[in-house]
Image 1 (cartoon, protein in one colour):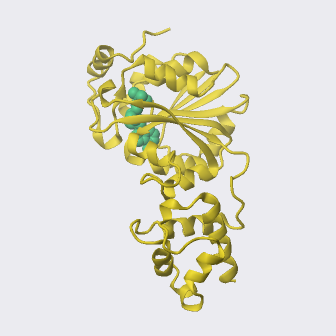
Image 2 (image 1 turned 90 degrees about the horizontal axis):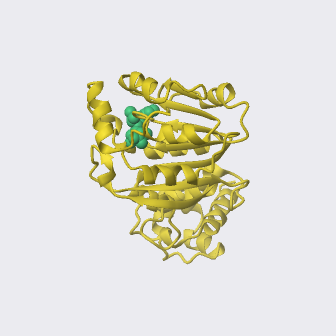
Image 3 (image 1 turned 135 degrees about the vertical axis):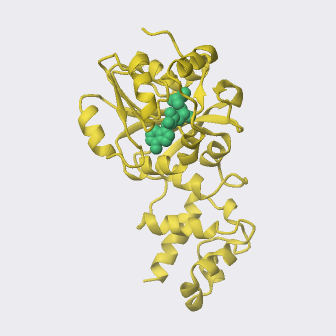
Length: 291
Ligand code: SAM
C-alpha cells in the first residue's frame, strides 16, 4: 500500500513533484488529516462487498482510505492535471477506477451500471468542491440513484442548513429539500486548518441516508417544493405575505388567510416555523384550489 498522502508535508511534496498549484476555481482544498478521513470512511459503513463513488478525488487522500475499505471505488475528477497524480497514488489497484469527468454532466446511471453492477450497495463519499455543493447534492437526490449513504464534507454553514430542524435561522428550503429524500446527520465539524491550501471557511461532514419513502405524502412533489420556496422568498415576511406575492392568481380568487387557517397555520407565522407536514398540507390545499 502506498504511503498515506493525507499529511501536509506529503501533500505539498506530491503537488510540487507534479508542478501543480491548487485551483481555487475548482474548489481545490486538499484534506491532510488522517483522523478526519477515518471518520468519513467509518460513517459510510463500507466493506468489500460495497462500492464507493468519490467525487473530486484531488490527489487521492480520501481515495486511499476508500480503497482500503470498499470492494470497488470509482473516483471522478474534473481536473485533467490530477490524473497522472491519481494514477500514481491510487490508480494501480484493480478495484480502483479513476475517471476524468464533471459530476454535473456525467451520466451517473450509466456509470453505476458499468462499474457497480456487482456490488451490494453504493455510497457517495467525498470532500466536495464547495462552489457546487448544492447542485451536486440535489442531482444525487433527484436522479434517484440507488445510494446507501452520501457522506460528504461541505461548508459548515451549508451542513447546518441541510441538517436543520424547524424554528432556527438555518432551517429553509434546502433543509426541506434534503430531508424530504434523506435522513441528515452531522458527523463531524472540521476546522479550516486541516486543508492545504487553507480555505477561509470551516467545514463539516454530514451523512445523508435515503429514506424508503418521503416523510410526508404529497400528490405532486414539484408543487410541494414550489410552495416551500415561495414561503421562504423573504424570510422576514409572514407566510401570508410571501404566499400572496408568490401565487397572485390563487390570492385573487381565494383569501390566503382562509387558506392558511384551513390548514391549521396561523397566517402571521414565518416559514421557518413550519414543519414539513404543515408545508405538505398547504401544498395539497393549494393544489386542490388551483384545480
Ligand atoms: N478529495 C480530495 C481531498 O479530500 O483532499 C480533494 C477535495 S477538493 C475539496 C475538491 C475536488 O473536486 C478537487 O479535486 C476538484 O478538482 C474536484 N472537482 C471540482 N469540480 C468538479 C466537478 N464538477 N466534477 C468532478 N470533480 C470536481
